[in-house]
Structure formats: structure tokens, C-alpha cells
Length: 111
Image (cartoon, rainbow, N blue to C red; front, side):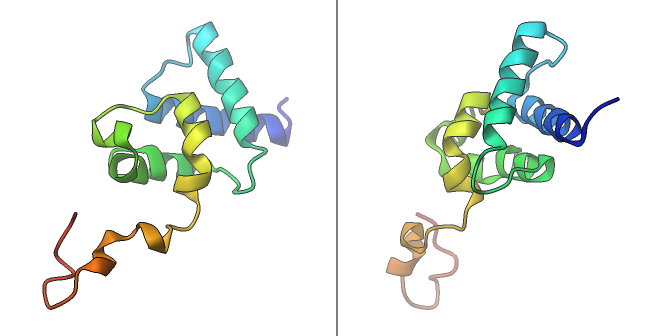
């Protein structure tokens, strides 16, 4: 029988494997993902499988804000651990470049 923490860890690991396009059936990969998921559970912003899928999935922040995601790369478990605080937190208003554009077309211009 699984404990609650083990169930959360398994769900989180499955989400990480999904967005990274990795196979949990391969023992060494499974260990790598489980270690990263366990580290992520200690983050200030609590990770959930849904947040992982939303942020690092095909239409997520990873694709819009990280240079590797913009290039079309899938995140690695290490990338998720590294970028989680920035991508899971509130967007930085200073990072919004549209604030420099004014006028009637400001909402449509993307930099």
C-alpha cells in the first residue's frame, strides 16, 4: 500500500515524464525522474501534476519564456527543477515588454 507522499511523488513523476517525453519504464530514467520530483516537492511553490503539465506542456510558459522551449526543445527533469520558481510564480511585470508600446495597437504587438 502506498503512502500519501508516495502517491503524490508518483503522480508528479508521471507528469514530469510526460512533458519531458521520457519513459518511466526504463529503470535509470525512472530513478532520475523520481529524484527530481522529490527535490521539487521541497519548493516554496507547491508543484502539482496539473501545474507541471500546464507550464511545461506544448502551450505552456516553458515554450513562451525559456530559450530552450522557444527553440522547440522538451524540458529535462533538471530544466524543470531549475526553472520551476520562475515559471510557476507570478509573471514579473518588468518582464512584460508590451509596457513600452503605447497606442491603439499596443495589445496586438508582440516583441
